[in-house]
Image (cartoon, rainbow, N blue to C red):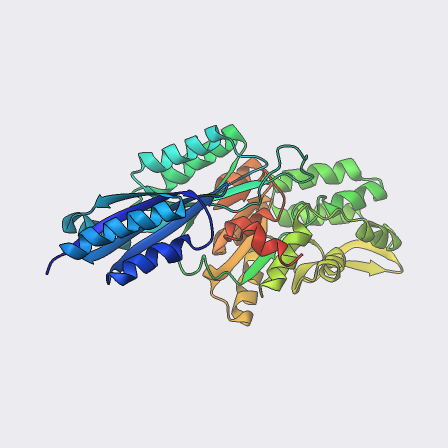
Length: 407
């Protein structure tokens, strides 16, 4: 005997036992659930169930009993018959490419979401699901650290990914919102290693600039630092020039600077969460090991690679020991750590803000420009500029409830 296919849509006040009550009716008639999904907004339920049932008496009876059960539960039920042709067409869509678009900001407006979803629609992509990743916001109590994030699961064929990401980047610039775009693949769900730049990423300062101020050469060093961050001069050259200007600075100054490092908002929350979920973490910095090792103890970082100051008779000589950790070296260290830990490169994340971070941002499975210079944002896979470093967690798909359980 032929079977009928129906889409059952349920709406109403959420309460325990709704799904169990409806599926038990379907079970009594030997119905088969083909798909099911549920959303709950402000205690209001929206439940969809696609089911198959034997045509004839069973089909009529199950619809009647489901309507009666819905009445008993105080909810509204609507049926829509689905043809076999439409069902089979729907089945063929499951092979389409899938992507994740994450929207982040201090607050998200309807206009920001409209502009992002317009781009998705214009590319003939379908939004399968929308999830809020951040906790509920009070309209009365002022938030100490406001942040909002939603995740869109989209499906379809993208003809021009570069054009799509450029449109997202333009919206980000115009509307002060972060938009991350990722393929929804096995690697996205199984990241294992996160590598951070240090200065202006894990900490809200450029240490070499602070040391220069204490050495009385602040303006000279700051100008060189800025040019290097913008990619205007070679990092190695800028590093050597700045080091020479620090000659004669007392070693005692290093400790005072270290204990007062301004750790970036959200950094502790991010790293504590990563550690709890088994991630490996690393500092890959063009700064100095002295401060990297201090942060390693303070935050519980697994690896540190940075430049080593040469110190003789308690003062800086203006030289360094070993190779300069530049952009290429950072990318090399990321690959080395991944290999050592048995982690596929696609399971890695790199976070940084400067031009010398671009190589590691682009070699990592997920590269994130954090509060970065325009040149870096425009050339990175993704960026976060509107909230703190823990915004990385939302790009990984974590909800605040996954994070707050650990705090």
